[in-house]
Length: 174
Image (cartoon, rainbow, N blue to C red; front, side, top):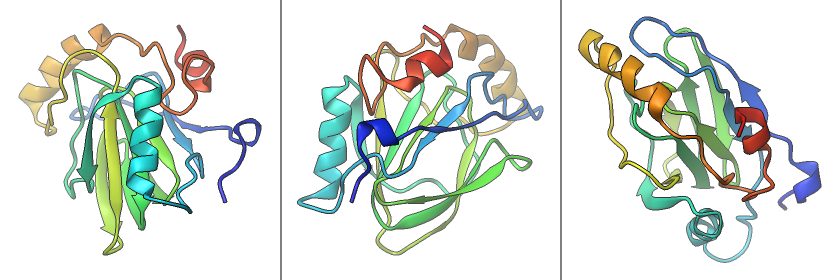
C-alpha cells in the first residue's frame, strides 16, 4: 500500500564530480513507495502520475547496465514492477535498491547504472519540458561538454510526484 502524501519525504543523495561523471550540486531524490502500484496497471499508474505533473517523453524499459548520465535534461525513474540495485553517482557513488512504487529523480549529470534487476523489473522514465534526453557515456570529451551544458539545464517547474507543491522545488531551489 502506498504511503500518503504527508508521509513521503524524499531521501536526498549528493555526489561529487569524479572527473568523468560530473554529477550535479542538486541532490538525487528517492521517493520510496510514492506510487500506488498495487492495483490496476502499475506502469500506467506511474505514467499517469508523471503526465499529471507535466513530465513527458515517457518510456518503459529497464536501466542500462553501464554508467551513463544525461547532460541536457533531468530524469524521473518510476519503478512499476520488480526491483533493481542501481549505482548512482559513479563508481564512488551509492548503490540504492529500488522496488515497485519507488521514484528516483535525477538532476542532469547524475551518473547511474543498473547493477542487478529482477526478471520482471519495469521502470518508467520521464523528463520535464525542454530538450530531449541524450544518453551520455563517461568519457573525457563528453565530460568537458557536459560541464558546459549541465549548468544551463533549467530547473523543473513541477515535481514529478507532487506537481507544483512538491519537495523537489524546495530541495533543488526555484
